[in-house]
Length: 70
Image (cartoon, rainbow, N blue to C red; front, side, top):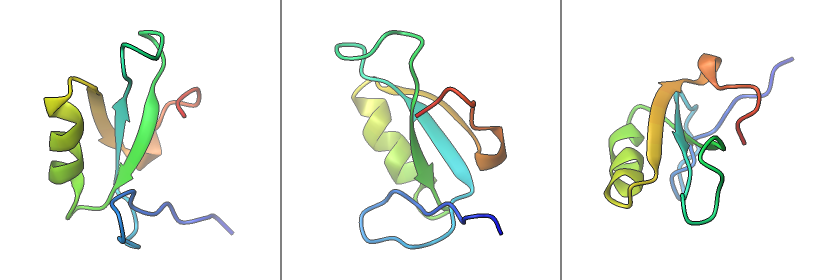
């Protein structure tokens, strides 16, 4: 049995379809990628939150999350 990946948006319990790969360059090495998961309803809002801070690096389907991300 595989575990369903849930959206990272506050209060959302929907299945995630996208992974937002990000890092804070003030805290993380440039190669490091943290992951927020997003359902279709929250991809834009979570991406915007990270984007305005300069943290968003990439958005990929959950199936394509890099093994070393986290």
